[in-house]
Image (tube, rainbow, N blue to C red; front, side, top):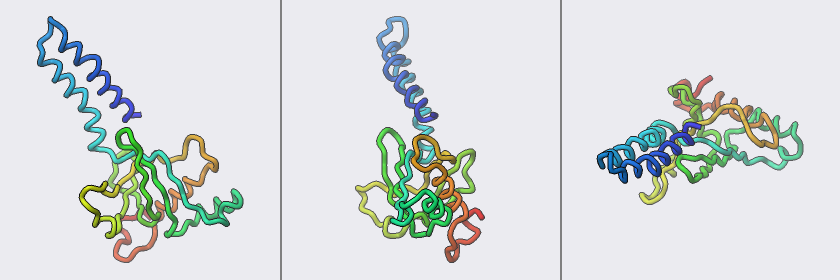
Length: 178
């Protein structure tokens, strides 16, 4: 909601208020660029201070977990660290899909007021060419699953597995919430 509001504030300032100041014979012309710059502030602050918003999470399921709802929930409650996710995020206007393993994710304990999931990026992805997108390292998750979901509760159970974390040598107690 904050993202949408900041986009509308920018559009309103850029398309309605700033041209009104520019073409008005009663107002000075410096107010038009100032209005344009000030209407962009909420959009820039939202972009800099927040991670991308997660819109969809697609979990790759084994064939046996697709057979029934009970098997799906049993798989989601004890999800293995090798499970793969496709996380679709929105930063500005276009979506971005990130393919990752669930063991790369952990809850950020330093996030204020939002559930932010951090990603431990593998070394192979860090060595990318300069013209490609950098791998995403943090995601904003709204918590409970909402919207049109075929099986309710699967994301909540998967999120609990992410909160519990996986044992990794040298990282115990530093990154994972137990």
